[in-house]
Every structure is written in C-alpha cells, then in structure tokens.
Image (cartoon, rainbow, N blue to C red):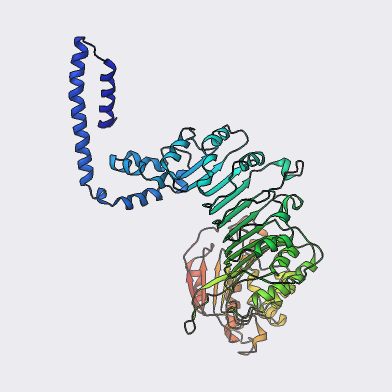
Length: 587
C-alpha cells in the first residue's frame, strides 16, 4: 500500500473509534496520528522527487498523447485488466491525476465476451469520465451473454454521442439493438455491423428480416456490413462514404444484391476511395451487357470484388476510375466461354491510354498481378511501381494452356521488363502455351522464379524450358545429355534471330526455393528429374551465350543442395550472386 493510501486507511480506523476513552485506543490514536503525518510527509517527498525527474517535465499534452498510444488494440483487447492502458494510472500521482482528468482517454468503450474486465460498474465510470467527448463503442457478444441488459441501461442511451460504432452480435441481438439507435447520429463517422455465424441463417432454415438503412448519418465516412441481411432494393447508403465494405459467405440467395442495385448504391458515392464487395453480387448467367451510363468514381484508390465472372465484370462496366486505382478481382469460371469473356474487359483495364504501360507481371497458379510506374510530373519519370490489377481465379490455373492461350497471350504486355513466376507454375506439358504468351513480352530483362507462401509445393526444373531453344531439333541436340555446343562447335550461329529463343533481352535470372540435389526430399519422383537442374542450367546459359542472347547475372537465394564448387561452371559464364544457403527449402 502506498503512503497516501495507508494514511487514508489509518484515518478511517481512527474515525471508527469515535469518542472512546479507553487507554489503549487513545494510545493507538496518538501513534496513528503520528504515522499519518509521517506517511503524508513521505508521499509529499515522493511527489517532489518524481516532479524533479526529466519525464515529469513533459508537457501534459505530450503525456496524454503517450497514454493514447497505450490504448493500442493489441494491449487494450488482450483480456487482461493489468495489461490494459489503465496501468498508467498506477505509476504516480501526477500520471493518475492527468489520466483521470482527460476525457479523451475514457471515450473508447470495448465490451467483449472474452474480456476479463467485465464489471458492469465500469461502463458508467467510463461514460462519466468521458464527459461529452464523442465515443468509440465496440461491442462483441454472443447469445449466452448476460451483459446485454447492462448495455441497455448504461451504453445504449449514449449512442447519440458515438463517433465510431462496431457491433458483432447474433442476429436477434442486432434486432434488439436497433430499437435503441437514434434516428439521427450526427457525430457518427464509422459504423460496422457484423452478424455472428448462425447455421440456421447460413443454410436457409431461418429467413432473417432484411435491414433497411434509415438512419441520418451526415458525417459517416466508413461503413462495414458483414453477413448482414440487407434489403438492397429499398436501401440508399450515405453519399458521404469514402470506405465501403460488404461481405457475405452465405448462399447467394440469402442476402445477395443485384448488380443494378449495387451500381445505384455505389454510384451515389462520389467520394468513395475504398470498395470491397465479397460474395455479395447476385450471379447473372446471360453474359455481360454494355452499361447504358458510366458513373465516375474520381477518388477510388482500391476495389476488391469477389463474385462470378459475369457479375464482377458487368458491375465494373458501369464505372470510370483513376488509372492509379488498384483493382483486385476474385472470380470463378463455369466453362471456357467464361474465360474468353475476360479478354475484352481485361484489355480495357490493361491498355488504358491515361496510364503508363505495365512493366512488371507476377503470376502464381491462382493469381496474376500487373504493376505500372506511378504517375509522376512531366520530365521526372517515376522509379517506383504500383499494382493496378490483381486477378485471382477459382477453377483453371494460370499455368493451364487454356488460360495462357485464351487470356494472357491476348493482352498487350509488350513493355513488360520484369516477370515473376511464383510457385511450381511452369510445367513442360504446357510449354506451347508459355511460348505463345511470352512472345507477347519480348522486352523482359529480368525473370524471377520464387516459391509462393500460398502454394508451397517444391519448384521443379521445368522453368528452364522457357530459356531453352525454341527449335526442337536444336533443343534435343544441345540439352543434356547431348553434345556440348561450346566444346564440339555445333552451336547455332550467333544472333540467329529473336525466334530462336524466348525473352531475347533477358539479362537477369533469379531463382528461389529450388532443390538442386537428389535425396534432399522424400518426393523421389520429382527429385530424380531435378538432380540435373544445375547441369541443365549450365548448358542453357552457354547456349544462349553462343547465339547472342546471354544472361549477365544469376541470383540464387534460399536454394538447397548447393556448395561453392557447384557454382564454378556457372561463374565462367555469368555473374553469380549466391546467398550461401544450404538448408532444405521450407516446404
């Protein structure tokens, strides 16, 4: 017990004696009064010492900013009272007085079913100390929680003061909560509505009553709606929104929105910067129709749309947006006709006249990303690149011939100089598709082969087929284990034409996550093939050197089964940058 608290305790004991005349009580009282005086003196001395410390010279405004940073979610939501920001009030008298007298520190009310600090008296304490400062309220409860009645008494009447409101509740709790929301919330800038998982609703056994957004929120900027049934036909969202996220993982018939309704809703938000529509657009199966009108979203920076291919593209057709906007599309295909439908809208995105051409392409089995230089002022070209398109697919992989030939090879990617292939995406069985696509990108100067965190399969040596001669007769004669084109002089003449190989301007090859020796992995079927990958790479590099399309640098990172002597043959042809790793790749 600190001296000041001890003094208060002794004073309480003395008062409990009243006017007693017993000798021991009088003697105790005399000693207690002396101890109280000493304790008060010690407390005053400690405060004086604390005041002399450099940290006590910080202006109160700076200390308050530090306390606010202590309210970080990772600390405040840990479920432990002692781990929360309130511990700053136990440091010294000055800090405690400052914290208790700063309403902003008490304006964040977090109520969770997993939080250990669940004393109902805490709610009115927080609200009283926050005075009239706008509140940030975050409520996360389940059906069995008995705290809901306390919220009705203490929290709900203060909703008119909410600046930020986040609700994660069962569906029936939401219905009870909405009866308390005031018709007008002029301070509200952020609203999050999320319905917790309910199998009865998810699988259609219970039909929830759709919500209609009817509140007046003139300051609302951020709106998140998760798993919540909305009557989209009769709903109009605030036109002040800059952030809109609508997510669902239930069957499309439960809470989906027609493309026409979503176009109407989003088109009324001229300030929108962030848009996420996840499995919310109703599917359409009669193809993509031309938009009768085009709505401008001049401030859009990012859009994520997850839907069937027809719905996704039909929705995008209705909008124009800045060339710097980052589009992330996650879609699925029913058949090959769906794949062909991608070509025209993708061309419109890739070949925009008001954007610099794509310079970097990143392809994994399930995703393709395109990057272009950032917009810069005239005369000062930008050196950094930003993503403007990410296409993720369910169904056929990007390594499939159908996708390579019917989508990627029909896009204008002539200026691409950097190609990054992630995961085990190159297969010799699809070599014809890769040839057709890579011929559309003759200016590639850097090729990166790297493992993907999402597809952690080991990478085979099939990627070397992209560097080998295109002529089968030349390839069979000079690839392992045929004659050495350097030793026997049978190599083709130098500069035999750009049709002799892919990527004629290639100068840098970077490989990551390759196993160079047999026996490192238990997958013997793959590693029997790849045991000769280093020899094969050596021959390929020598052949490209002879025909005038040689590489300058080979970068080897996070590859196993190598030692310094293995790389000596490569160093006689190109500059080798090796990180020295000899560990097994993290599959």
